[in-house]
Image (cartoon, rainbow, N blue to C red; front, side, top):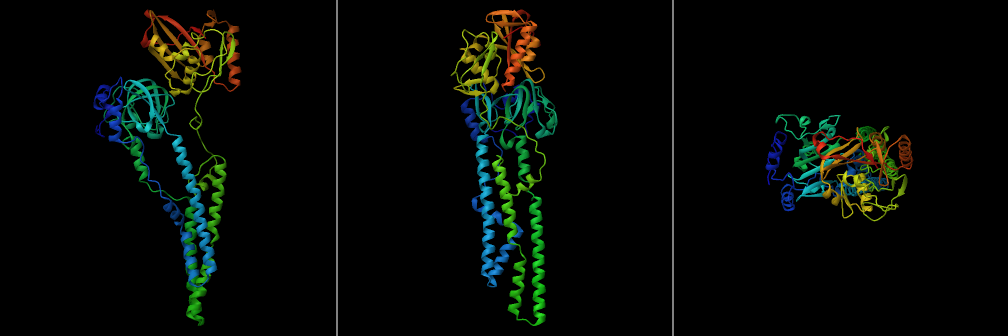
Length: 519
């Protein structure tokens, strides 16, 4: 399938976008169609410069003007018969090049291994099923499912949005997250005004989005910028500039010394050959052959110390920049960790109960006698994540809740079949909860998960075993104290709540979280 890169996807309606991409807004692409498009459009990755061969990296160590002057000095020293100096200079230059090559080659190997660890994934709907695939396998027409915290893997047209906002500063410079809506915008609108488009390498900060991929790899907006950056020549660091400047000055000085000594020798009547040898020897002696080695060893020591602190420096010259840095701003994520969450404790019926097991499997148990499936029903229903064969598709926190419900014998898929979702309120950092509404005969069941203090304030009853009791001040204080105790143990604490609403009184368009019995 070929696409016109000039298509204004933001100006097309949802139906037009899906039709032009030959996709399906409900089931997504078929596996066969995705395979064919991957062969046509190629992997969804930005173009990279081809890796430098080892011999090229070694020769690059001789690009410094000072190194070239030293090599010239070694040749001249050998020419006048001073083999000792020539050999010493050559050894110093070769050791300097070998050290720089070894450090940079090792850093590049570490970065390559790190890049493989950070391979991004994407959640898509193919053949009507939710799947998690490698982001490089995305193709135009794929139905992309996004939620808060996701890094968008390709350019896509928004088909539906639930309070969705995206941080686009990396692409457009907008400092505030941009609200996304599926309605069309003017064809001539600027990139920052296309609120129905999401772009590669931007981040969803709020809500959920469903979008169809319109461009991948170098065809994306980020790919266009990557192409411009690739055409920009790399500049030299201040240290490299200073060493080159020093090399030029030394070359001028050595040339002047040779000329003066040669002239004075001829004026004194010295033999021509002896005069030339003396002038060249003095010029060679003026070259500080130990300077490049000292600089390289110093930078290598800095690189080694950075490596001991788990910081990878690709080039020796970059250590100089790090040495001048006084403040580093960074954002901690769970990307380099196992990035799994597991429920460790459940507080209900006035007691805390231990939960065993690791990861997202069903192995493990809740140290509690009796059936708690009715208590954990919101954990299974109020979630957008899925666990398949022990692998999580979605948010780690929701995965931990699904695993907890499974350990109580409550399967999310079966619960959703019996209680299909009909409306939702996506999680919002301002409200600190997520709510889903499920059809249950003549009633609508509300399931909520969120911050304990928020849900306590919204609730008027609580579950004690199978009894619904008024949530008085003493009970509120007990729940609040348990929340603080669990948080004090470095545990992330979530509360679950629910309520049953008559179907006749429920308005999906104006769904709000109402006070109700909490568990």
